[in-house]
Length: 274
Image (tube, rainbow, N blue to C red):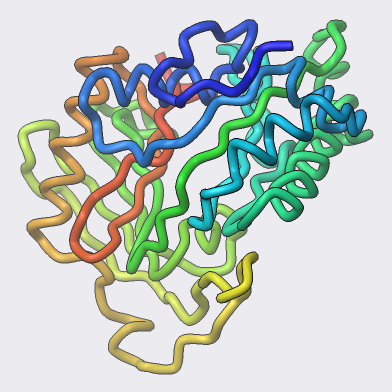
């Protein structure tokens, strides 16, 4: 059984899955990724089987960690060029302490082995059994967050596309809001800016977990949630990710107290025009 390693040391996708390896590479490249831990496939399997030795290792790891974590799927092969399993596998946010995180690991593992995920694998001709590693990443509680593409995901244009909303980015991923929408040239030139309708945010609960919360301030609902300086910082981050990992990046980000964090960086896996 391979014990958890610091996220920046994760370098074997067959052991730690694509998400942990990509975030580890981002940390080693000096990109602003929150630190954390990479849990191997066999370690996650052992936790799910309630193996006493594995549970003791995880409990010892978290004994002095009262900070909250995001518990993310890092499945082997889940983000290959032919397939993206986004939406198939759960992410458990704001989980605190051994018991809560162990429960979250079980939930993430089950989502990777669910009927829907298995049917998706079969549709794509993937016959290997699911292999789920886990990324434990220190939680960021952003004032605003969102997604960024370094190639337009629909037209294929060589430009940066940013969507942003208040609170955690799951409000965008789950389709709860119409996010602010921006398009930039790689040189920072503004192509389009369009305010959305952001009347819901997802915020953390003090004891762990998250909840939906209504936004009632009309200026926050209809105004931009991110300023010019942070937008241009995002564009620069997108260009850096392109330079480090190659073009066509799909990026999740968050801004907390004015600090920009990279939460995920992977290849765009939707079909793009040639």
